[in-house]
Amino acid sequence: DRASMLARLGRLYKTRLNSPHAQKDDFDLASKAYSEAIQHKLSPPSDRLGAARSYAHFLSHIDHHNSSPTPGKLTLLETHEHIVRLIPQVTWLGNNVSQRYQELHELGTLSSRAAAYAVSVGEHARALEWLEAARSVVWSQVLQLRSPFTELQQVHPALADDLQSISLALQGSAAHGAGSIALSAGPNPSSFG
Image 1: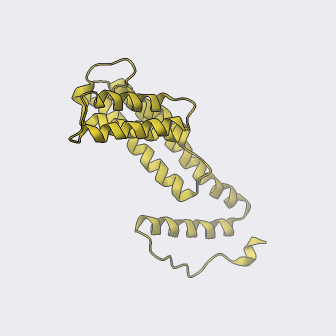
Image 2: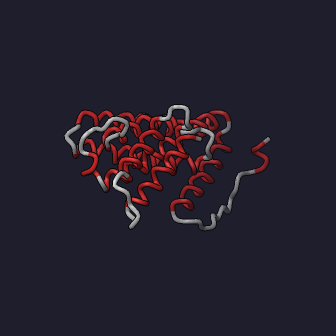
Image 3: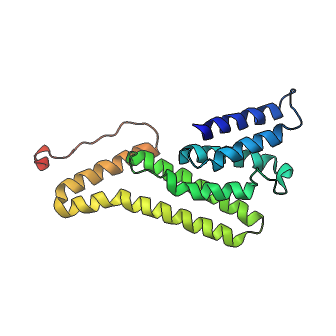
């Protein structure tokens, strides 16, 4: 799709910028490609978010080139604005629980970085707005991850307890590396009927 192609083009110009073959307009070409990728509304939000993350990283290391707004190129503050606006669009309920927890952690980090930058340039109200928006998305997702246990607990408490134990063991395993999980007393097969 177009956003991912434009982001790759931006990365190529960014890479060339640090090479002996650098051209004087490589920064502008990279910025223009990234900016177009981020703003391409017909592209998947995940591709646009990836482009925004790469561009924010790029600008945070070369911000002195981007001190004033230029037509067709996003500033670092505008890029962070796009990141925060894309976060609700990339949270997907189709991922498994582990993927969703990882995604929530990454999205929380992105919004925190955006807010930190906003504070650093004196945009305190915007930083607060971004943190509140991200908090809303994260809590919504966390509640959706938790609700199946609540519903199951109401219908079949013993099975819900078994499933909760397994879930906690899996979360513990994921947090401490890929180790084996010892489940001595698994769910009772007769409770499935």
